Amino acid sequence: MKGKLSKQIFTSILKISGLVLLACLVLGGGIFYYGYNHRIQQELYKQALYLSYTINGKKPGEIQKLPENKDRVTLLDRNGRVLYDNQVDPSHLRSHYDRLEFQKALKEGFGFVRRFSTTMDKQTINYAYKMPDGRVLRVSKQVDSLFNPFLQGIIPLAIVLGFLLLLTSLAAKQLVQEIVRPINHIDLDHPTDQALYEEIWPLVQRISMQNKALDRTLARERERQEEFQWMVDHMSEGLLLVDDKERIVSFNNSALYLLEGHKVRRGEHFRNLRVDPGLEMDIRSGLQGHRSRKIFKRENGSYEINIHPIAQNDRISGAVVLVLDVTQREELEQYRREFTANVSHELKTPLTSIMGFGELLGQGLVKDQDIHRVGNRIESEAKRLMDLVSDLLKLSQIEEGGDIFKKGCFSPQEVIQSVLDHLKEIAEKKDIQLIFSGESSTLVGQKKLFYEMVYNLVDNGIKYAKGPGYVQVDLEEDLNSIQLWVKDNGPGIEPEDQPRIFERFYRGDKSHSSEIKGTGLGLSIVKHAVKVFEGTIDLKSSSNGTTFHMEFPKTR
Image (cartoon, rainbow, N blue to C red; front, side, top):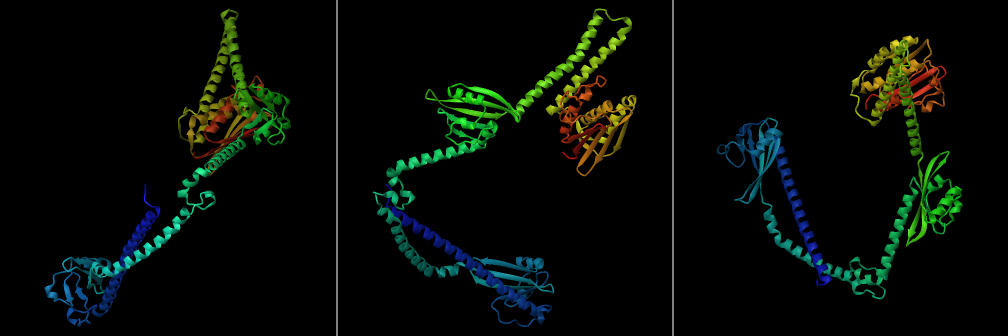
């Protein structure tokens, strides 16, 4: 068992008071020591400055007797030899060149040095001053050790400290009585009505335990409810809770928005939401223990509605309705189906031709004079098939972000010129003029990918341009980017086709002509190539032609 509380408090106060007094003593001694030394240094500095005016430029024999001064004055030449001393014959003194104050004065113009003598229990403070004539004047003062005056004052100091400790003990006793008075006068019948210390709260905890525990439990439940409601309100998914009486327990704004329901309050019947009748039937089915998952399509998107019954103690106590916006997922699924169908169609067409001509050759139904033509047709369809597979692989590699093309610095101007040289013969056959203007500095990226991008755009322009016509490539550079335009005088792209022109295998009505061949992947490759270069692409099209505009940042 520990001792009396009042005694422990009293002892602690005395200990702290003693430590505070000791700290004040140490701090006061330090301040006294600093002030004492600073005063002596100022005195020596003023003496040295005054004497320097008197003896500056005079020879040792011309120096008159200095005023009586208990401080020692020494005059040194540049080599440390003593020229004059007011207390000792200079001839009996050795060189002072190695003295620290002399060295400091030569380098810095003045020097303070303190030396302590253990035998005499004194310390000498030296101040050396370099006069304008180059000589050094030193003033020295002997002072007692700081410990001597301290010993002399130890008895009165002890008396003062003892008096202070006595006052502290009396004040501590009074303070202890004030601290323990509320403890001695606790009203045990109504302990919680008093202002009591936290340390003695266990004394009344038995009486108020149940109330406190209940308050804490309710506070935690309220906090959890608020956290849950905050999360529900900030969910992008719609959430609706319905109890077994078909009343709304909880909901969020996303549920009202996605279900296009009317504003309701908690506790109302879920019919007041006025949602789709089919959804009402599904909710009632969920309250009977049946799960359901359906996709609802509306003009503004597609929504997945999941209904799960809530079971407690072998009975259904409600249902959870979770509404997810799956518009993007459905669009991707539709895109995947269209892509699969397009790939199947594009692969099937050349394969059907190859198989047909192969069967004719195998059955000997081709005339000798037609064998060369049939062989060329099979080769053409096979090349078309290879181009399609090559473009598909190329597009897949670009989308996956693989490092299939070597990165480096290259000149866009040189790449564009190489593309035009490659397509020049094809353009001349269609009476299409290839025009290039502009120049730029280097671009960082995949040179081969940039080549593929420009090639597809120019090749497209040649295919759709009207002969005689033109395909023009313009290159410009500004402070932060390089811009590229590819223009043609083709029939243009219909406005309704423009948003989908970069999709795989998509072709506008004008591209269904059998005279224009291609894989339908060119512009899709262009779009993904621009994305790799972290650039942007847009198009403007009319009945007079189409212009593709690309912008690439210089630094990435």
